[in-house]
Length: 527
Image (cartoon, rainbow, N blue to C red; front, side):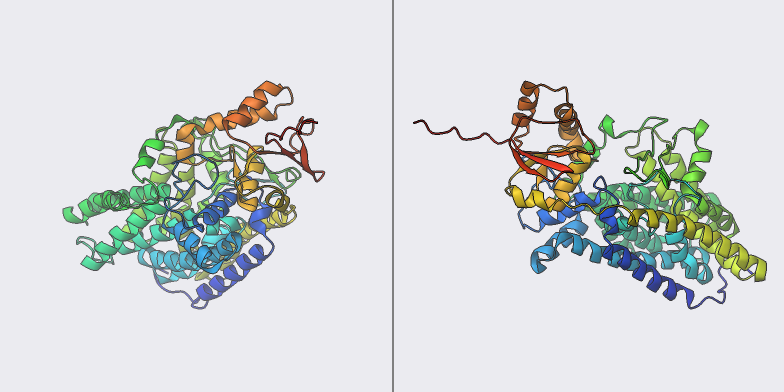
């Protein structure tokens, strides 16, 4: 059968949406995002919603005490959630869970619409199933998952990703793409005026919400324009519109008042945000996870790229076959879109370039939806192939979920209970993330500092934390660090620094954690 012809799967899409929604809700009920570890960006976003819920303008940084320091996460998405938290009094974590479910639904609808335009209604029925199952490593007794903890995947095994700004940005990405994709036979002209205006507005919202995803959208739009020129099916005005749309969106986004959007361009030039081969996607799972999830590195250099790339994308690589089988301009665009994202992942001048491997998964998932639709319509052997491909993704996802739910749910409520609201806590970077997200206290150096924090000397904070927690550090060195960052408390995770004993008053000793009060102690009154 030809791509685009509906197969006998009309009820598949709504069933997949319902099943994915129930599965994600169950993972949230089990607090899977917290079990993923304190080092994830989920803690940053909890802290952001809590800070924005205070209603201050301009808002303070969500992680550190630094007067006037902007936070690039304060885009329309998190500002909206902060306003909702302020209005309803909902706990930030629960509000993020609700946002994750809403994002899943919006993503399902946007992906279906985009897939239908590119590859037909038949493939669109399979689009969500391909997205949530075909993202992740190949199944095996030990799973090597280089991109673990990075935002950007659409796998249900990474439940926290669905409430990240990246996911909201991915929805906007797909909406813009759907607006500018031409209908069959209508590629030469411009979209209608209302579609033009909506595309500019949504692109601006995307730039302010998640600039890295906006950069990926720019790459996709330029690719779409290039394919039209190469095939001689797009007019000059249409090509100019596609190329100029990201610029127009950036200009409009520059008006966003919560952080200097254009300032991100300067912050992104910081050399600390560039990976040099063979760095890339490196992940070290929490203690006890090595039996299922092993660390691995993705070497982002052409000489050693293909095998790790196939390992990261897993069963989704079969989507290349489906992309080639798409008829018309959709085939050229899907293949070129994937190739451009992979090339950008190798580009040394781009900040956070390894994330473009994640964007490359999207055209593969659409191609996989095409392949599944075609296979299902070809009888017993075709259906066996489709079931086998989905089973490979499901086994990989299931193994990761099983491992994840076996991890301990972190609890740092005692930090909020025993410290004042204006406390500044020094801890290792993973623990610091948890302090900011779960306890709502400012820290010295979080894991994965944001662009503005890095540009404002964030690495000095990281070095100071490492120096302070070194058992060989002397009292004078520690005192200078405490004074520099106005630290009031130190939280020591005994599992990470078992030999560290500090000469400060102990505010609380829970066994696994020790909380020290390092504020100057009042002198005893004389006789």
